Image (cartoon, rainbow, N blue to C red):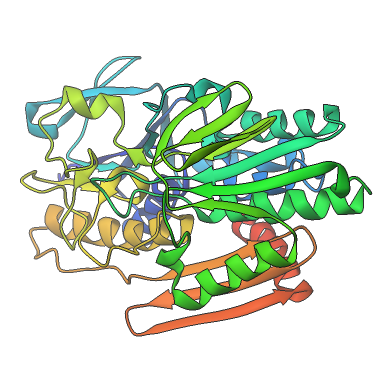
Length: 378
């Protein structure tokens, strides 16, 4: 009797859950185990709407019990802590989990080395961070709001700037709706002279023009030095800030240090074009955990994680069956930069770059996509 393969997936985010869906679509018999701290999906793209009240915590957390039952997936409530036996044993905070193949989709980690970074809120750390922004905005009677992002100098792909543009334009629009915008100065800052360049030249021009149109001041092209409790300090000067929102660059999870897995210069897991971790047998990666071959504008976003998950699942099953692992993923950036009641669509592929600016229909499309995407997990 042939033993069913044991496949372990780490992470209950976009990459991990899409991997499970793709695995189960291709193999009804494989024994799949999901390892994550909680059996729930946090839909982080929706946190941009928490400060203005369009979304609440309970709308963005999806319990996965029904999804796991439908797909016959075992759940191991734990955090990954290391690997042994050439990847065949995953060490976790709740004991070891054996596998025949492994997919790592445990996300990335924000680089928190900048002096004084404790004075800033990092929005994409989760729902609680967005709630802090909401509460601070409610408390403030006026002042300066500083919003910016930076990257990992050793990893061009390890950056998440898109949501910061959404917080920037969303907060501007929210304050205008509340009749309070004239009491605030909003400053956008970045060490990049052309923030958003990874979205394409048209997008950079549009974003900077939109900031000017909205009366948002910019402080660009200067390396960060530190944050104080009430100011942002760069090599090009400093400015007062009563609220600082900052997205640093990303690197790999701390638990990667307890493994022999290949790492990129920026600390992520080094993957090949088939999403296999370089030099490892039957160990794959999808989403923010990995550094993948491709253009330096390749995004760290849910859509890219989904595409990588499809390739990882196909190749993993092929390898288990003794077939060549040949599947690759499409490199594609699709982003609606939302501003509460309108949005701008940015699309980029190796041979095309498109911008559709400022349409209410695009805001509605972003909300519709959220509903459709989450329906698969409810």
